Image (tube, rainbow, N blue to C red; front, top):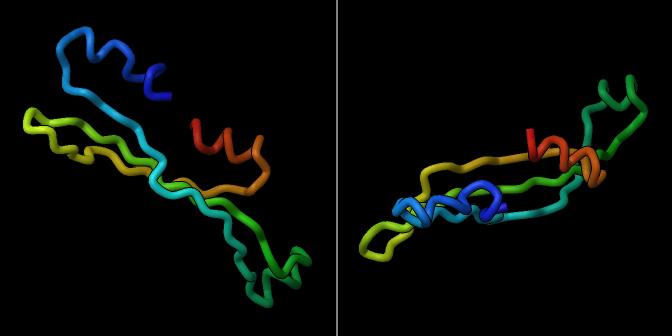
Length: 85
């Protein structure tokens, strides 16, 4: 993903930019009684990702300039669509 988005920045003399997935966890969320009565599910699995963009400064330190928190169903196809939108 880094190369597709930021591949040409090194050629133009811009600082190095890196995209990192800092956290990637799967969790279960218990629903409220009203929600369970309406939809019939007590537990919903979901995936939570923290994606951060860092820029390398001249002194070698990395500075975060963008942070994303993405949550979605654990179905890979659905989660991929949410992450890319």
